[in-house]
Image (tube, rainbow, N blue to C red):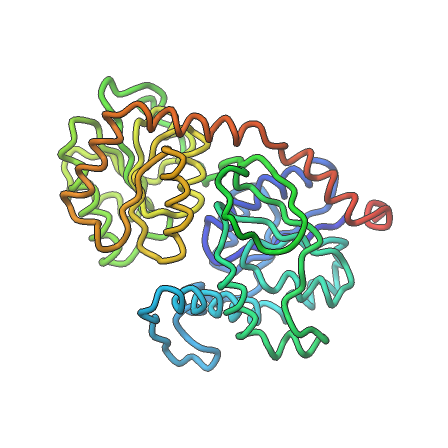
Length: 384
């Protein structure tokens, strides 16, 4: 069987799909991963074959229209969510020409697209093959789909569609107890979340407890600009006052700046799943893969989301007593320090995080889900 996986424009969207793509490849199926060009090093870093499908970046698709004109971010949170969906729609439109050429040469039997990879249903519809929608983390608001459908109205009409198709199957890595009450249509197959990262050699200190609380601070894998580095530095300084060891997980290219700004901190590109095994708390921006990796490790979280769509999943984590969330407007230095201290002092949060970790461990693994993909594709796909 030939399976085409389609990622989004950030490393998290690659890492989310890597477990199932790897399991399919290990089962003997032919796998290709279509990704924006700047994401292909992350794909190949997981050991999977990559095909670049656009040289555009996610930042460009999000903040420029198709003619290259700059777009302003809406102030209203709900409009911001639709705005984000439109950006993913522009990403899809840009990738369709290369995906069509790839499909003509390679002929996939099945297409697996990440949560917001809207090229996946279009190319699958054109080929007449099943489409599987694969969640990236704790779920995306349905208003994102509405924004993408508006942006892709012409592309949908060109293939005889008036709306985005419903997937034949959802592969959902969000544990059932943390899913949103309103889910997008389509049958669901639960799959155990397996954390993936780009690797660098482990250091001995990562493998042993610090003897005092170890606190990880991160803002994800895309910290680059001065404003983003400054925000991460300020977050680290806020947590530094706790009686513990501070570790900042950040791209290697900004690590030196962080260690100069916060003396004594350990900073660098650390494989988060390995690092969190000896951490007592993680403080982060609410990113889905970061949150899922912390839940997998059973580590309490202080969630400081900066994008409206992140807030509902963060609140569901807090509802499970696996962490605390500070929405925008309540992210003062004092509030962050107080919340972090509470999470370290109260064992109830560690117990809540452990409960979610056990729920994740109980879900079917990627190898079992490959069988569901085989059933969708049918015997015709298996014979290729």
